[in-house]
Length: 195
Image 1 (cartoon, one colour):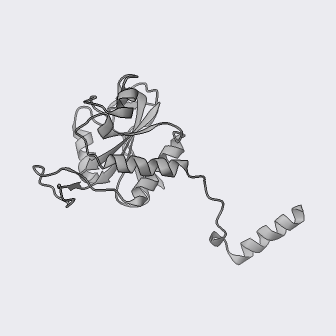
Image 2: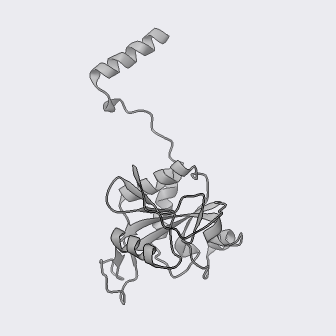
Image 3: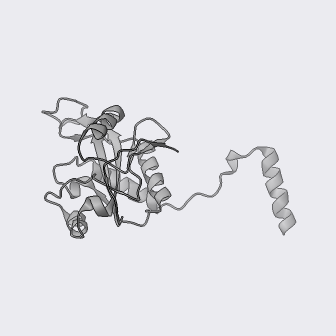
């Protein structure tokens, strides 16, 4: 996974990350970059675009990013976690690119009929989980943005569920199929000498 840095200089000088907020951005990578560059306050720590193998870092995790906005009718876990203060100052925000959809699940950019976001690809969700692990945040609670701010896309709850599953998975042992026969024989001989 390649990390591309696209610094957005809108952040809090300090942050105490105690949970993760997952977002879905209803638009395109180019549109998100343009928006974040030109608005007064919004940002994310990391962004997972549709194009493969990449995560874009907007704000390093040593800073707080204005990604959660204001708390609005939080639910369940959102109520509990937002009681600890401003979610922008105590959470890590990661966003996945997705297209907006209407009530029937059809992609649309007619904002009068947009009702939710499409489900990002498994590759995007895997990269989000991998990036969370890279930061060492895999044991932190994960929450959907809609659970802090009620009018945000609900599809994020499904994304959170999948990310939580991936974070619980144990790393797979090294796959033998990734080696040549010569390398495998060498590994076997090394093991036999150790016995």
